[in-house]
Image 1 (tube, helix red, strand yellow):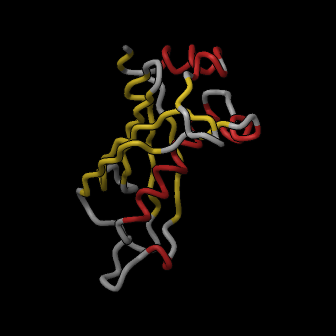
Image 2 (cartoon, one colour):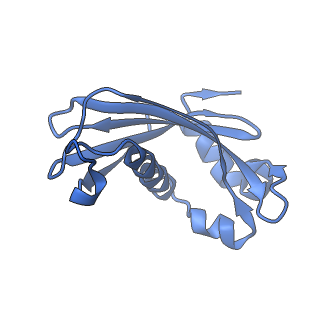
Length: 141
């Protein structure tokens, strides 16, 4: 299975008054993980944007399992869970240094024209990228 990993040193600014990582920071880390996966697969999201396309989030779910704290290193594991004609679902695990799962998540994205937000198929924009996602996805439709 194709899984990207990205380590993130937890900064003090990412914690709340209780000394734990503020919940919204996990979503930022997911984006970092998704960007890493795209790069590891051999593509550049910035190129899509230059060509006039964006990949907005259509749905997001996250389950928090074990709090993380300042000074720890989080590992974000990211993979393509599903990929079909218009949607890509990414899966995530955010891990403590000892492998304990801090959070699990999924985000669903589409590819859309930047100006109109009209959905487009990745296969029409970048057939090689689409083929790679079909190859690495746990599930395709």
